Image 1 (tube, rainbow, N blue to C red):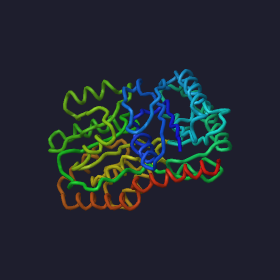
Image 2: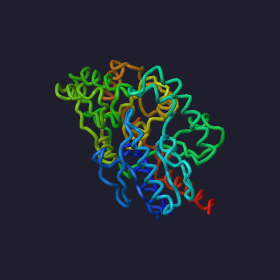
Image 3: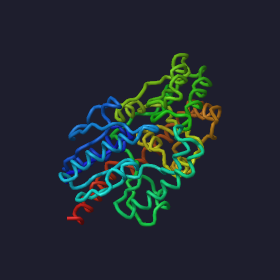
Image 4: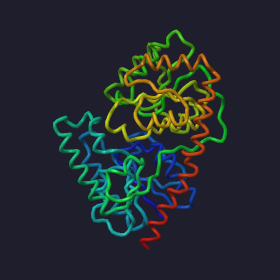
Length: 361
């Protein structure tokens, strides 16, 4: 197949897009064109793809990016068998396009996520959420959908395949150590930024230090930089997914201190599965999907929302009991290999897209 992958919102180094789906398509023998905001993010091009640079859609400045994406899709559509969209606003950009199969990869609960958008006035969130839900129903009637979570099924009237945010499990891992507590992912207040800073301060007398790896929301950039400067945390900035996960290896624990937000109640945190796959115990808050993973597999500890003291107690317990710590690490690793391995899920993802193209021929 000739596949056009498009995003104007996500960092082109996004793990789901650049480290999972595109490699799965390339490995399956397909030709991939990747249109994304490379320059805006200062990102390099993944191996094996043809790049197209697009503007970034950000905050209230979205119209130009959508317009440029529409022009690009109009030019490129005749040369492709399938267009894979990663942003809901791109549904406008494919309106009226004929020929290729159009697939929308539903990454999140878009309506629920509006509560986390600082650029959207609170007074407009309700009506905007209603509009998003109408767009979703319209998209379902026109295009193919794949879902990142089982919990997204209830938003749609028809059945759609789930392509989970599993992770490529490494062949080998090293034993969980006692020096590093790690977080990998976007750093925002809703994802526990202040809690992780306070956790670092509470562990100031302890061997373990808190390491954050990821891009920071502009609203808290200065806060993270100050906490790094005074030694409460070690902030490594953004690292490509493979480099970030290499730093997870051998950690004492992986953190997922999400707050109780609507968008997180149905989404399984990818980072939890990544920690499990790399043989590291998890410390998470009780968002239902995360707690279910940890409790069902006995692979970590659950602490309260906005409870850095509870997280510190969990770190100290794991540090003091290396036998339990390694058993949790082993349990998580086994569960990830059994149930959440992208090496298997990626093959299924490619087969789904192939089937849709074959059906349209």
